[in-house]
Image 1 (cartoon, rainbow, N blue to C red):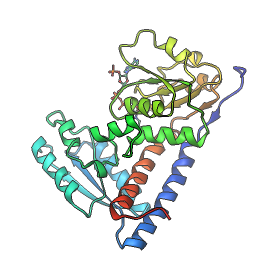
Image 2 (cartoon, rainbow, N blue to C red):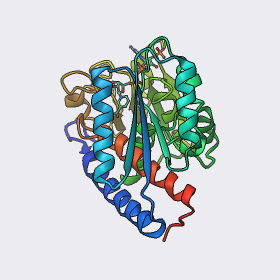
Image 3 (cartoon, rainbow, N blue to C red):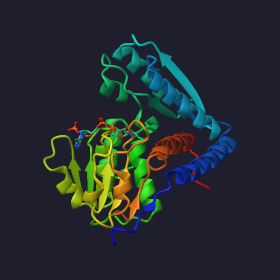
Image 4 (cartoon, rainbow, N blue to C red):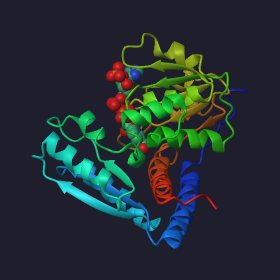
Length: 288
Ligand code: NAP
């Protein structure tokens, strides 16, 4: 590919809209067959404005897709033990099919202990150890939503992963690490890069698929993108800027996600899809 061509843009908004449409149809089918609509419980500790907005947005999207939501607003003074108690209660409640603990929960909360109180069959945000194990062993379970969205985008654009070198920049528990595990499960050869990586550009230059999951505006330079590579930018920085220098990267990549409108919209779409799937499994509704 010549470097003067521009890459095909991944339409994440379009795929997310189609995913939500299919999810809504499935939610309606479950309600018709069982008399019960899928239900997502959201829990939030404190009133961090960004977290409040995220939860409100997720619940609004649930409502549009025919998914009920139940919100548990907990005071900032909530202890780990109290939060664990709430999440265990939701895990035992047959009226709740999926559970989302909005995080970060605050420095005084042991977030891992809280996540582990979520029953695996209700872990629609893919945050428990059980879900991580399922992702790394390709066994049935739920995936972390943003990595799950990335995999759906790659599949929708027929990106062949077997034998390809995928370089994942970032290794957070919710994004980079599971993204690499899911790529490995598709037989990609995966390299993780992180803040201690020496000479990041050298790794990026070798990548057939780059997944940027860092949170540093335009850290990945276009000049380091291998001509013809697939570039997935999960980064979302102030001013609608990704982790990849989009303007230059698109002149070398074959396929690239824009920011916004690429990976971002897929995250909520996967959350909704997994909530409905959880309800279907718990209510014993087979695919028709
Ligand atoms: P995070 O927890 O802060 O993790 C950032 C990762 O990037 C860490 O693994 C860190 O390495 C690595 N890193 C930091 N500086 C680096 C550098 N200079 N070179 C190489 N690696 C570096 O962030 P996150 O939650 O994974 O989020 C990453 C980005 O994705 C953010 O922009 C966030 O807004 C976005 N995001 C988007 C969605 C969505 O729905 N689209 C969802 C989640 C996150 P160490 O491990 O060594 O510290």
